[in-house]
Length: 164
Image (cartoon, rainbow, N blue to C red; front, side, top):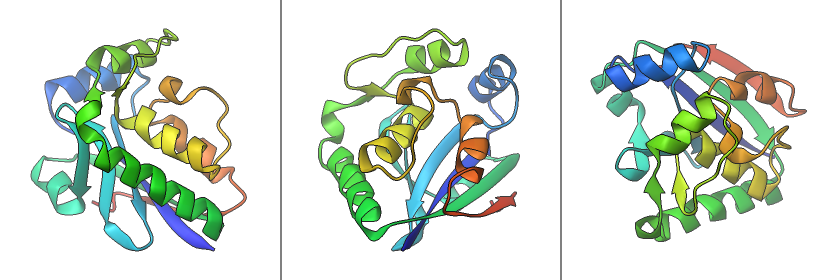
């Protein structure tokens, strides 16, 4: 068995504040880390596929954060890692979609080809690897959805508030 963590954060900028209010408050960004390198997080931001660190989140002025850790099988972990590395290798073919994030926050079910936002990416790799069974399509997940979803997972380990 291996562990993964989903880091949820709330930045102090106008985009995050806007998303915060239309998406039901809480967190406005999500990223995922692997047990092999728990200080490195993978996500999508306005520049596209992103590799992030806790220090980067601190520098960007994270106001609030939450980390949810779950345990998954070795096979699911390997598939999850391969999904992330596949995104990394093909990062030039993907782009970030603000419109997709806005539609998701407004609960408008629309998906854009080869375009992701942070929680869409995290949900996508969780689903593709079989690590977590989703209750809706990956592009319909906002960061706040992950807390309950992961805390109900059989392999739930812990939720830590403000680890950043």
